[in-house]
Every structure is written in structure tokens, then in C-alpha cells.
Image (cartoon, rainbow, N blue to C red; front, top):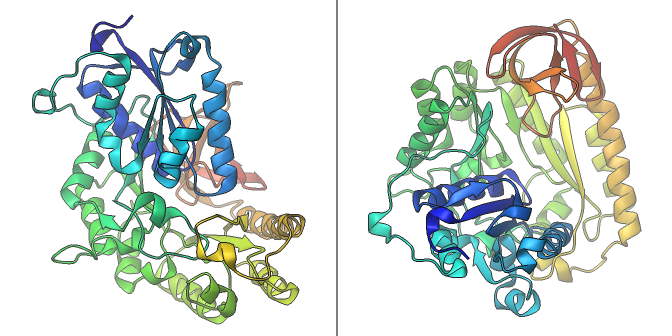
Length: 435
């Protein structure tokens, strides 16, 4: 029986993308500020928070599996509250609470600031009032050499296949002051690389009363923290401006790396997705980026099997990838999501065919991108040492490798957090090896 907040140990389980990881870190901050203790052992925690993802059906299923697994823990069966937060409560609302009786509370994305009150109520312990809460600095539970920082939330694009606007709400930028403060606190903890993320990073600042730009933000951060790497993810094609290209080229601590989700190259399909662009327009954009930014690295994501995609249109998408414009390509089979406009589009493609097309596209991308990675053999890169494998093998990442998605660089020496020059001696698919 918990009688006081300081006696309560809270565990957090996070599903989904890096944006959810940031949300969890902020919830942990609020819990600490109220006197709760945190633990990474959910089976012995006094309460468990599961921060869910529900972007697509497979993510919802993964979140449900995590909830059911936690519901089977002895401590939960003995009365430890199970609290579900994030995308699932935001997407499914009251229907979720009626169906998922394993949880005692549901907290959508928009209410995560209230997590301390929810946990205290679930445990039946009094909570320090908000006015009396100590204003702790933002602190990661297990700080590493890189950290994600959200610069905005929500989305106004309403792509016809996407649930994000319904889950996260309308687009709103976070202030420079809030972003800079979080970066500063993370840097003090030893973080060497800051990855700026959002649903649509390229729109940052456009919704302010006095509009600003992503280029302005990156330039300001790069100057304020000259010894910290900055990387920007999830920039829609319209967000690639000459001003941004100039800032990236100008600052050595800003990774010459652009993650640009194109989704497809066929104008008719892009229009059905409520997006813009074409094969030719994207090639023009890519060439323009390469002309303006030295040694630039490009990543994209593509959707295979969108409703109405003909074999010819799919072959054109494959040809686009075969051209080798991108160093990294993420591929997803179209997921038919209730509540989206694409759900009711005609000419839905069978699951087996969608998966076949996605795998075909992945295989092409792996073959092409592996050759591009191999071209780095003999070149020297600055590598941020991250840690070591269980067998003691040290690894890190060069600026051409985004965390968690682009592979790592194996090295012979170095200390975590240190940035050292490494000459690449060999590659295996997306991994690099050097000394």
C-alpha cells in the first residue's frame, strides 16, 4: 500500500516513434517534479504507464500486445495501476476505455501534462499542487550521446492515408525559448547530438504571430551550441528552402542530412494522397539540394500499394529508387486506416499484393543503397562514439547516419561521447567499419 508519493516507483513503456520517446521523457520529468521515483523494471513497479502508438493498424496491435503483457504481470494483478497514454486514447477515445478494461486510466496526447495527477489518483495518494511543484530541469532517465527534441506537434496536412491530425491535433510550433532550454539541459547531461523532430519540421515557426522559419531555428541553435551536432528529420519537400540549404552548408555542426518523405512519385497517386509532386519535380529538388550542400546525404520514405496504384505506376516508383538518388529509403505497405479519406477510395489492393510490392521495393532499395554506403570506403568521417556491443565491440555514428535507422560505424577505440576521425575500411549493407 502506497501512502506517499515518494514511496511510489513508476515504470514507463514506450511504443512507436521517437516523438513518443520525447513525450515519455516529458511525462517522466513531471512525475519526478512531483516526487515520484522512476524505475525501468515494470514487473516490480507500483504503477505502469504504457505510451502507445496508433499511427497504423500494426502499431495499434503492437501497443495492445504490450498492454496485455503488462496486464499479466504479478504486480498489476496485485493492484498496480496500468495507465495507457498517447496515440491510442487520442484516436479511439471513450471506445477504448469501454473495450480495454485491463487499464485503469486513459490519457490522450493532449492531456499528458496531467500525468502526475492521473498517477496519484490511480494510486490513491495526495499530490503536491501544481503551484508547489519543484521546477526540475528536464532530465533523461538514461541520457545517452544523442537525444530527440520535438520542435512542434500536430499536423495540418491531412494526407488522405494519415491519422496523425486526428491523434495529435492541428499544427503548433514550440517556441525557440522552450526548445533552446531543453537543448541546453540535454547538453549539460552530456548529449552530443540533438535530433530535431516533429510531424512536419519544415513548417516550424510559420504559425507564430511574427513568423519564423526552420532555417532561422537551426542557425540559432547551431551558433548557440557550436560543439553539438544538430540533425533535422521529417522535412516535407515544401520545407526544403534555399535559406535552410545555406544554413546547413554554413555550419559544420549541422548534419548535411535531409530526411524528405516523398511517399510516391506519381502525380495522380500523390493527388489522391492529398500531396503534391512528381518524378520530375523530385529529381529537380534533389539536384538542387546536391548543388547547394556539399556531401549531402538523403533519406526518404515511400508507400507501396496505395489504392489505385497500377503495376506501371509501381514500376515507375521502383525505377525512381533504382536511380540511386537516396542514400537511405524506408518502405511501407499502405495501411488502410478507418477514419481516413483513403479508407474509402476505390481499387483497394489486396494485402498480399501490397506486401509483395513493399518487399520488392525494399529489396531494390537495399541493393542500391548498400552500393552507395560502400562508396564511403577509404573516406574519413567524424564519428560520435555511442557505446559498445555485449562483446565489447565499440560503435558510433557518422553525420551520414541518423540514430536508430541508418546503421552504425564499428571502431577500434574511443570513449562514448567522444567524436573521433575514422577512416572507413569496409561496409556491410548499411553498417560501416573503420579505424
